[in-house]
Structures are given as C-alpha cells and as structure tokens.
Image (cartoon, rainbow, N blue to C red; front, side, top):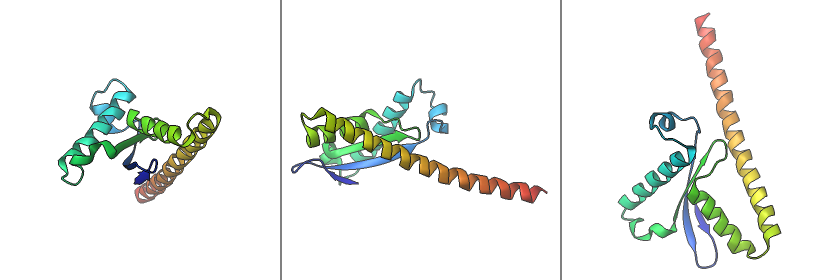
Amino acid sequence: LRVHVDFETTCLVDVQITSAVSKSYVTQGLQSMDAFLERREKDKMREYKKSSATKDNMSSIVPFVVTTTGRMGPAAFAFLKKVADTAFGDRPRERARWAFRWLSRLNEVIAKGLATQLIGQTQYLRQQVERMR
C-alpha cells in the first residue's frame, strides 16, 4: 500500500493482521504481545533488506502489524501518529476525532474478516459432522 504522508513523503505500508492466539506466538515463547508484534515487524523489515528494490530506501517502509483484537505494533502506531500530526498539527480535537474514526473502522474491518472466517469454519464443521453420520 503506498501512502502519501505529505507532499514530500511517500511510504510503503506493509499490512499484516495476525491472530493474538496464533501458533507462532505461543510456540515462540514470547512473554508479551508487544514482543510478538515487534518480532513480526522485524521479520518484515528483514525481508525488505534482502530485496534490491527496497534495501536502499528502508526509511520509507512501514511494517504495519496489527492483531485480530486491534492491538498495533509500535511502527504502526508511530505511523498513524505521524499521519495525524501531519494532517492536524496543533488541532488536538480534530486529531483525536480522526484517530477514533480510523481505529473504529480498522476494528470493524477486522471483525468482518473474523466473522467471515468463523462462518467458513462453521460450514466446514457441519460438513464433517454430516459425513460422520
């Protein structure tokens, strides 16, 4: 996703939505969700460093990692703060209103995605039960 933060800055935002109870979180023995999110961000950046297309422009890449519960990694949070600060400057009420709307929309999108997965799993389970009868 290419995002124009202001007239001079363009960022490549690499979005990953990950489960807060994913197997990789549990098996890595990480002590906190923050550590898990930071690990995902570092993994993404490591991949970009390998690429000749991006290794010379790492400062414009944002590893935007968020859990299915809406918790964001530090880079995602910092990016949103930068966008809000650029757009609203010293108008804290507008900045807060924008952040609330944006985070509400993000949570809505995540919830819809989870609902779709849940419906699919329910249908699969129903098929399995029917086969067993």
